[in-house]
Image 1 (cartoon, one colour):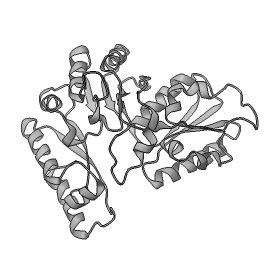
Image 2 (tube, helix red, strand yellow; image 1 turned 90 degrees about the horizontal axis):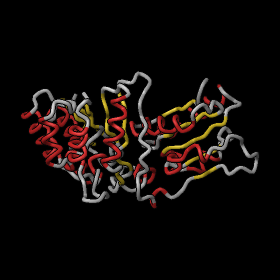
Image 3 (cartoon, one colour; image 1 turned 120 degrees about the vertical axis):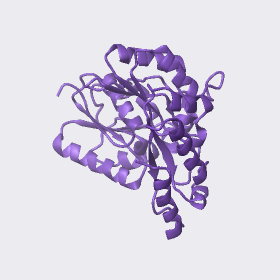
Image 4 (tube, helix red, strand yellow; image 1 turned 60 degrees about the vertical axis):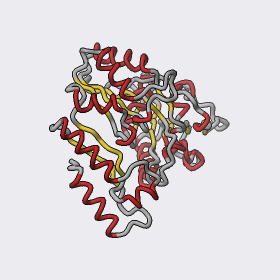
Length: 317
């Protein structure tokens, strides 16, 4: 093995984070890094299972746990005898600094998890090119200012914060120069990109700068979008620029207005249907995917039927 073993659970943002960690750690083959997910109880269970499996397979390796589950419940992972160190999501930015070459013995601090809610800037450690050099993920936004009732992620990732557009464009240029054919913009709530930056930028402005500033980029793809937060310029680019891929993944969650209200979502079912119809009318090759939650508390059979109907009405793939 020529570098650390990194086990990644969860979202595309975690995938990008893992690649940044891999580059920071270089040839450190004494480590197993478990980049955890907290989006569901099952994700946390799988994280604990992955830690135990890694220890069985490599009993001499130091296991470092990071990610959202580590951030939201560091004590649980610190208590696991297999774990050498727990690092929070903010500590990911300087991962190597927190993992010394040699363990300090029994007195070594086992948990280093700062208050992610106090973080106000997104460190632009954007690295995310994969071995085949075809597709790269770039983290342009992190954290979330919304408080959907089903979601723990804001407490794992902190408040919404954006990477300056210039740094993103420069990174895309470097990746294209290395042969990357497709760049995926990712984040926790990527459609909230920009208000924290000077001039209150938008995701549409960022996408436009990338497309204009890197004409050699063949394909640009967006990760999960919140339909009601899509700004006018982004909508124009989605329906009008062929380099922006004809696939939009929507954060719908439900198709019943009462359930959406109880989830504290910011849209109604008709808004989702109209958005899909408007986009498809202007770009017929567009396809849509979505996140949907079944069995939300208080959901009746009729409410669930409304969500099932939304799959057909939005023509979700």
